[in-house]
Amino acid sequence: MTARYDAIVLGAGAAGLMCAARAGQRGRRVLVLEKAEKPGKKILISGGGRCNFTNLGAGPENYLSQNPHFAKSALARYTARDFLALVERHGIAWHEKTLGQLFCDGSARQIVDMLLDECARGPVDIRCGETVEKVEHGDGFTVRTASGAFGADALVIATGGPSIPKMGATGFAYDLARRFGLKLVEPRPALVPLTLGGEEVLFREISGISAPVIARAGKASFPEAALFTHRGLSGPAILQASSYWKPGDPVLIDFLSDHGEDWLLEAKRQSPRTTLRALLRDALPARLADILADRLGIDSALGNAPDKALQAAQQRLKRWEFRPNGTEGFAKAEVTVGGISTAELSSKTMAAKKVPGLYAIGEAVDVTGWLGGYNFQWAWASGVAAGEAL
Figure (cartoon, rainbow, N blue to C red):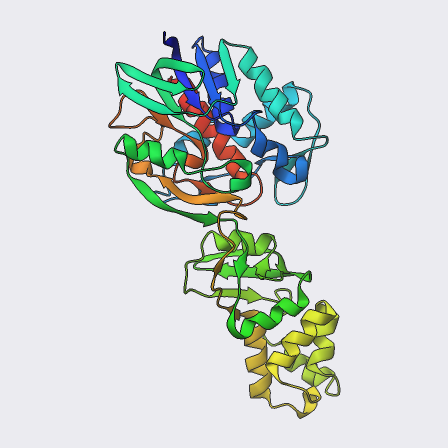
């Protein structure tokens, strides 16, 4: 016998739980099916275990999508301040780090518990350890698991993308979207470390060294820390740039963003006996300074170096070109760029235009936020949009 509900939500992550809570509080009977043994697994590991649950500056400009306007409606109707108000109603202490990033003072478990409490305010049934075996579409939707068959007029795809497969992430959302004839934007890893090869392998010698930089990929630039690793480049600035990087393109690093364009020529006039290596060691970690100085090849005192050579060194330090040979893939990616095409969905309700009763939310959709709480805010906003439409 098929158990009946008003809606079935596939996935008990951030978007799925938010959607279920909002729909349940509107009186809808909601079933949430989650293949993991516990809900909110990705929430629990986020932000170093403290959950960077939103960003005060979250707006459409902080998201990547083939349709940059798609996220506007949901983000405008459920803002970071709205989610913060919910956090405060539940008595969760929080703090702001940098750049509008909000974290729990305690544990990410508080956010999961809050979402479960919100779900408990309505007729929401959450079942974990349930692997979907089959989804049928006829008179509504029927979802079959080892536990039995469940039916509903509405089905919400909230199973995320393939990033962090060790947490159980898969491309299930995409397989289901194809099953219903929805187009996909080719998924690729985002917020992911970049790998280096060729002559740039020598930077692996300074694995573990980080420095504040401006990283640029395409038209995007991010002033945060870059970290050199045994495989290439990481750190917040690089992770941000990786979402905009395309294979074959360079990533440009400004190692001295707080220095003027002619700082080296001015140093030559003021301290002609000093060396480029010494100046770089004053501004950057010593091992990084040494490797940059070696690559620039100016070993003499600045007073003995031609202005043209110093100008070229200045320009290179402001736009140091790395040519990544790839990324560390979905295994190390925090999120996924691409997914279910926004052209297939209503920006107001997240409903599929061609399949009545079908919805897609969160990371499953081709909307990807920056590092720093933006992806959680999209999960909350898209979850609320669908939850209010169910």
